[in-house]
Each structure stands twice: as structure tokens, then as C-alpha cells.
Image 1: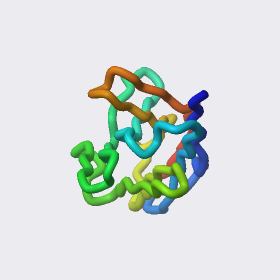
Image 2 (image 1 turned 90 degrees about the vertical axis):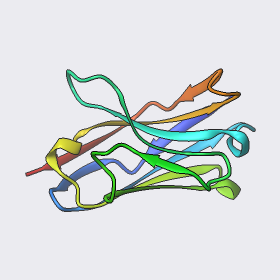
Image 3 (image 1 turned 90 degrees about the horizontal axis):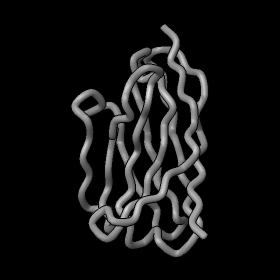
Length: 118
């Protein structure tokens, strides 16, 4: 059974930092691309960052480039999102997603709240 569990969210002042973690149980992590998504109230869910299964390719939304860094530790079945220089507009529920077989299979975590105060 596959489970994704996010942690590390919380309340931070603008300009601060947080590191989100997503631990993946099951045997899919090593061959899955991993992504971080976020959804603010009234908005659609958007992809923030993605990393391929090997960890050599990362992509970011324009709104977070230069501030957020996605990484993965395959030995720990964990993907991270380091968020620096946080802004109030980064406030959202953050979700991690595992996908493989060209997106045919996808699994989501339950989300973790990030709130950035001004």
C-alpha cells in the first residue's frame, strides 16, 4: 500500500523559511517522479516544483524560482521542499505527489498547511 505523508508546514513571517518533507511508504519511490503542489482557498491546485526519479532534473513554477528548492533522498524515500524568502502569497495547503509510468499512476499526500504572515 502506498502512502505519502507530508510534514513541516506551519506559520512563518514573511521573509522566513520552512522545509517540507514528504515520506513515501511502499516500493514506488525510487522510480517515481515527485512533485510539490499547492492550493490556496478559491484557487486551483498548481504545481510548484517537480523532480525526476533520478534527481537530476528539476522544474519550478515561475513564482517560486530562486526561492524554493526541491530535492530527494532515495535512501530515505523522502522528497523535500526548501522554501526561502517566503511571501504571504505562498500561503496554501502544500501537497506532494508521486507519479510513474508517464503519469498513468499517481498518488497524493494529505497536505500540510503553510501560512506566511505579513
